[in-house]
Length: 82
Image 1 (cartoon, helix red, strand yellow):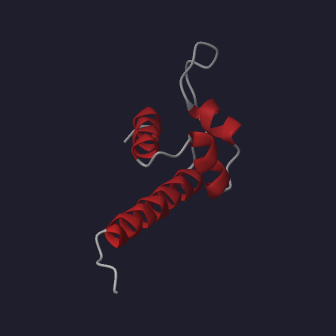
Image 2: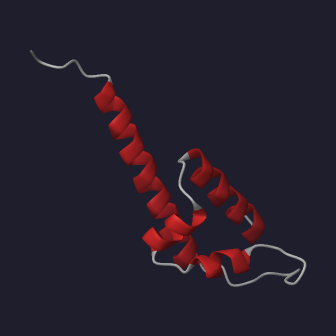
């Protein structure tokens, strides 16, 4: 998987989890500017720098967010004791 595909996948998962990239980066300990620098843009046509540890930190945070959402949604379906 190349860097741009990885970035698009992270953005897709963050959007599905309803979390901003800035918040995701904050939770993963990565400055949001670093993430956006990885993205392809007119001033940066050949972006580099997305290292394995940073990307892995973003994946871990997305996994945590998705797990928390799943728990919250599962909790809504439980009957309330009288």
